[in-house]
Image 1 (cartoon, each protein chain N blue to C red):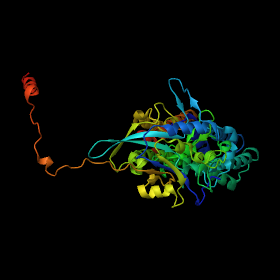
Image 2: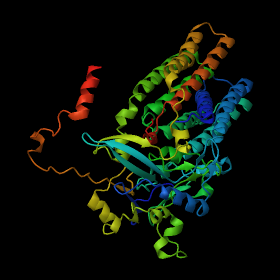
Image 3: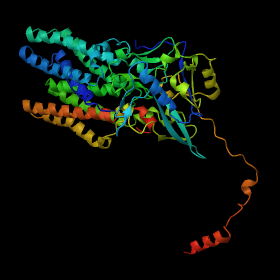
Image 4: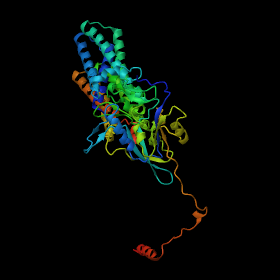
Length: 290
Length: 248
């Protein structure tokens, strides 16, 4: 799948922002007044910034409001509802903390679940696609949720939680990669099932429909950089989990915390790039490609 | 509405005969011609006369080489367009309701004025039947020429999809696959019509007819394989040449 920068930035930053809102909703850290304002501002910049980035890949962003209509069937529509609900509820909860020094606990918990629910709906957009076997597994929501929550703990300064959750996210990431590498073969879709010509003999793509490229090949058959996948996986895991955990194990210092956050974000960006670039769509089979 | 209808009484679709298709691409051209100037946004091309041409097509013809265990390879031309699936994954993922399956005849269509161009329907389609137009930024797909098949302003003979009307080999058939007595349903039953990627669970309406088995050369005499070849060793000039070359 084509790793569109808008979607990579969206899922990385909004995942981090909603992860932070998740912790703020439960009162970690228990901040009020100006400190609360700073935390909420960071969370909103990340979450809303991510959502705005996601509209850049739309052909007609001016019609985006129509995407709220089909929540009964479409995960993309549910994501829209969840995101707006989470941002509204958490804005109310945050206003109580910032301006009234009041903690509305129930509202915070509802907001926390709506925030993490938004990440889940995002994950289900990918997880539901039978056409991309690597994504079509419960590991996809596990992967996106574990990174979002770990990043949230890191941003919220919950060091003990952050270390545990980062290690957990790293484990989920490794399992997702390992299982994902066999997903296409075990899904059972190949050129023989695509053409139904397998009972005659071995099928090979002889000639594509056009000498040039097309939308399908650009969007679904992205092979650039796959040969560096292993190196990138090591880099992603090192920056996303290993370096932040090592830094967090040192005595606390605000500058070191910043290093941990920046390293984590860079690692998630690399991991998200691989999430798209390594995902193979079955339509590539018709072109004799993967 | 992007939820699918429970069932549709009529299931309009295509039956494509892989035995007959000669791979001339006339259906591709006629589809592009009709659909670029009729229903919906035109099908744009980018850099059409330049070094890197590409464009939007609703129908594309692939060619596959199939090598049997014994005998010569077969070349099979393979037209592919929207299969108007009964369980169309492209419809349910649409966040705006722009993609829908018609209750009255089962055609899967896009309401282009509602399409936000998110591309998710193309992601959900295993067949590559949907293409985002690079100029109009909306999703384009086969309409089964909905603006021809019910069009009383054109002669009755033309009220079939453009690709079917054009095919010089008669490899494309159009009809109601929901009616077991229709000509297309009978053709599918007789020839063993196939679903593409059945494991994807999309229940395509369009069917593909498999290539007929190739003839084998008849055996002239049961003893023929036991007879010696007529010329085992070359004689005369060729025999001399063969020996001379061996010695070199």
